[in-house]
Image (tube, rainbow over the protein chains, first blue to last red):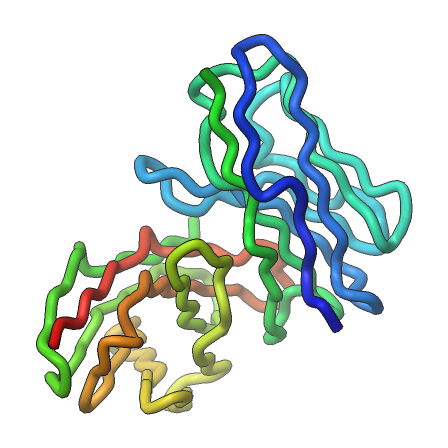
Length: 115
Length: 112
């Protein structure tokens, strides 16, 4: 298996533009997570899906952020409009069942720079 | 709420030195505990885990013991290598939960 695949690896965009990050989880995994990593705040869980349904989006910073999972093999995280403070590395992770006692597999991340 | 506290980095060691990275936690119930490692430019990888008190997780020469009495899960390695240079994250998960709570990470630099 190729692991969790994220695209793009790097994204540079201007403030105010829409940004879409993509994630393909490991086949057969039914839980998917979006994390944001910054120097100031470390790793933050943004949203969690189970069987394509959003379960916990309490970490989504504001209405400019939205995430979808239209099927078991694809998820997107969208920022509209983007702001410089959104610059971070965004990680997608998947897990074969609920978090409990299981390993989460992370993608290589998307480094987003908003100028 | 649940939280994880790690020692501040960076930690700089010479090759073959002994490593300890401290991790303490606050949680309701009986969490599972994890150490993840992040190599430069990559995502996080599970290094080891322990699911109940007194369990010892181990992998690649690293060890950590789940100490309920001190609410700690310190990471140790007897002899580090340059290839161990990375950022190490302590994390916890409470039973039935869906949120892996991470510490802030500790950067380890190993020099020749």
